[in-house]
Image 1 (spheres, rainbow, N blue to C red):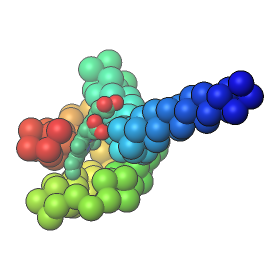
Image 2 (cartoon, rainbow, N blue to C red; image 1 turned 180 degrees about the vertical axis):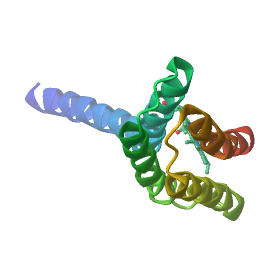
Image 3 (tube, protein in one colour; image 1 turned 180 degrees about the horizontal axis):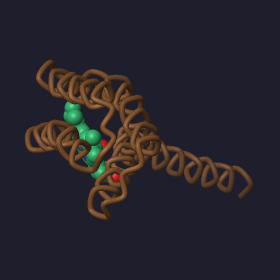
Length: 129
Ligand code: HEC
């Protein structure tokens, strides 16, 4: 009786362990989505500034720099991705570098600086998302 209970307990633990392992494999890590979510947040802050026609140079700079630094985590978050994906990531980096150095101080300048960034997001999403 006792050994039958122990065997049953062992089975349950085994099944639970397997279920956890399978779900961990499916999720891998939350990092890819986290990086994208942070970038989307700063992108939306910037787009909102343009729409509201309230373009404070300091706030713009902060959001652009945060976006740029989050984008630096793409290669680490998507480890093992193929070359074309990494090129798309580099393209985003390039457009963000340009946007930061353009230091847009008006809504018009910000809209112009964001266009290539937006294109870089879309370009990668169309091919790899
Ligand atoms: C180099 C490729 C690449 C670039 C560049 C890129 N993304 Fe993504 N993005 C992806 C992939 C791949 C996914 C799907 C991730 C997943 O489901 O795990 C994704 C998903 C997302 C998501 C959905 C996240 C979720 O919770 O499912 C958002 C939002 C997002 N990206 C925003 C952006 C923004 C904003 C930019 C530009 C500033 C950008 N991405 C640039 C590849 C890219």
